[in-house]
Length: 173
Image (tube, rainbow, N blue to C red; front, side):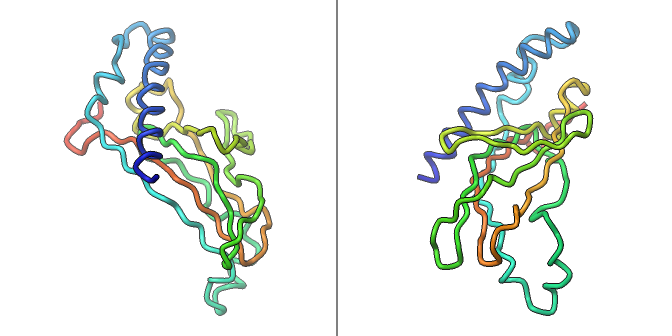
């Protein structure tokens, strides 16, 4: 199933490049057609199952430091070109599924926060800093964080994520 999920996310990422290329040509005619598809035809796609540990696994002497934090992951932007992810699932430390909001929040170009909601059979995409550079700033990288949504102390969050990156030998201009 892991490989099958990676193949689906990879396919979504490749298809999205076609639409992003079309948009870039519309906003900046100096950008060549199929620029991203050509530039990124040999890219690395790294996938991982991300686990956000429950609060009750934090050592007791550190818990007070984390008690009032609302985010599992603070605000940041990915350095990749595209990040594609499936909807998060939450589980108790006993292995039972726990129903909770996705937890992903994003900021738009005006700094307004939005809960990122999508269904289990859908995927979300975020633009990273590498694509911001490649697009000459026409595509903004997406600031995002992961909120705990005040889940009980024994609840963890998991999600499957795929990062599409230029190969290390590619020079970004």
